[in-house]
Length: 111
Length: 112
Image (cartoon, rainbow over all chains, first blue to last red; front, side, top):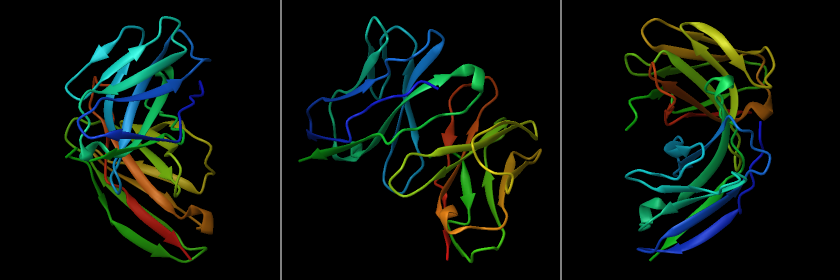
């Protein structure tokens, strides 16, 4: 499984965009980038995923560099409820539903 | 709300005992995965079940076993509990034809 590197923590002002970086320099051509978050005392929650192209949904946007060695998760207007641990995961679909979580980034949204 | 429930919420066991954790998912979610999350770490994949058979396993010993039932419920069994088994245990289910996993709230197991 390709390894990901994320900063241990980040702060963001409420209402501003939160940009969470992730490095995955050993990603293979058939591996997807997934983002999950885990709010305290809850199970992880799916946010978004992508292969090559940038993706956007109602929660966030995912920007993947052209060489696919890094990506950025963007929360356009962070709220206090977005305070959570954010996990960037490189997923090989051949391994079924197995997700390999790292330590993630603790995002603190402050008023 | 993911529609995935787990029981019990919290559990305290003694070293050497056996424990069974339960998970219930929505109709049509025919894949279930179990994860162990130690304090301060990300979840670690234990195994997954598809149509009542194990079809993927992480780096966990055989004393971790599971069952999946036709009614979309599942169990995680851990024998000969060790202190290091203290963790949050998460189950995640996947609807047929989907790649998205829906996680339950977890069971907090403490081994003393």
